[in-house]
Amino acid sequence: MERFRGRADLALDETGRRQAEAAALRLKGEQVVAIYSSPLRRALQTAEPIAKQLKLAVQPLEGLIDIDFGSFQGLSSEEAGKKDSKLFTMWLEKPHLVRFPKGESLDIVRQRVLAAVDELASKHVDQTVILVSHTVVCRVLMCAMLGLDNSHFWQVRQDVNAINIFELRDGAPLVVSVNDTCHLKNLAAG
Image (cartoon, rainbow, N blue to C red; front, side, top):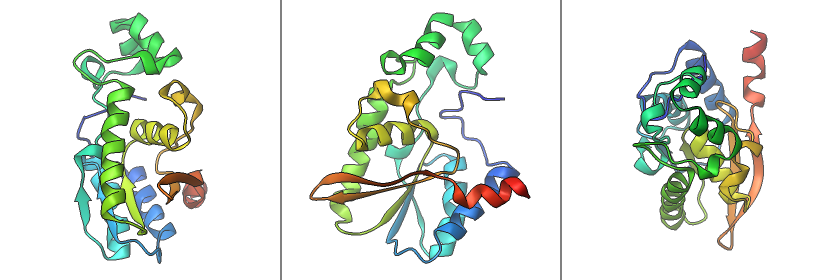
């Protein structure tokens, strides 16, 4: 059942661990200088096999943490709809206008993640780094990299454990690959 996980510090389940291992194999041999992860356990556990494969340490980075869903934290979609049907409907139809009570908006997430990316871009000029984060954060970052505002949030697909590749050219983002899940194909069959 899909839930508003957000800041819940959950561990990966067996499927998540297998997906993380598959991502690590997909990234084997890449010339990466650093791996940064959301400090939440599920992201760190996704980053660890990649770091091991590339012989790097995982560096927690607060700017990559998942959205704070506030009062929706931990609720299923059905529970969220019952708790506040107007807010839940707005989240589905106009997510860029939502600020979760006692939580964040997509604009706040965007400011936070772009500040982290800017910091890393200046620290790692012409170097490749890996960022491990969460679906909401990745969608918001992808919108930003594509030059789209947050009203396009639901128009950007971001599957679990997908790999997105961006380059910076003259300070501007270049989209190389989005929502690559080829490394997960054999898991679905197995």
